[in-house]
Length: 248
Image (tube, rainbow, N blue to C red):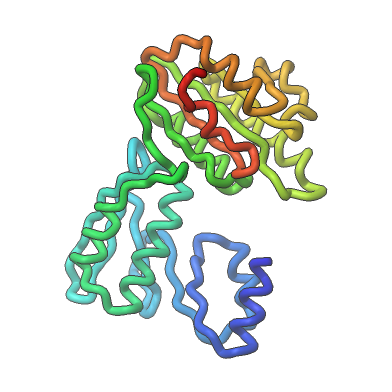
């Protein structure tokens, strides 16, 4: 589906915003003539015509910097966490620079954005800090979300991971890879929800599995969440946000 967009823009001489830090995008855009290219800043001299953004920190929240047209270093302290959100912030900055948005306004717009609608949303719930990211999930967003939880300071940590949908023939392999990654993080609790994760050897990795969000919620309501930081991450179809609905 992503390739179709690049093909359409190439055919119609459209402009592509190309994140060079995502290596596979270079291949998709090989036939596109008009490109606005940006990437994570590297050491050494900057390349003319290439927008570079430096990652200052991704824990507990993402902070970045870039150089304005006036040569001023602009630091942005966002309300987002995780390497995947660094990619999103880079794209926002590149768009702003291309469309001549003043650097101060780029900074204000990104810093004032507070995530909601189940997207990287921080919620205080039953004496726990919960990162609710239940709008979508795929391997490229699930992995950095797990790393983000791992990097946070907390007395106890729990990861509740829902199925990553629409992966086709790669589903079994990708779910097993995510399970192994999460298990290595040694969270206090690793909880899996959905039939795809159910096909993995979850017990071998000391994970708890529930076939759907209803059964997971019954268990979740009985847990003592005091002093926990919890990641809730899954595809839209799993509807993991229902875990936080009040008790009937």
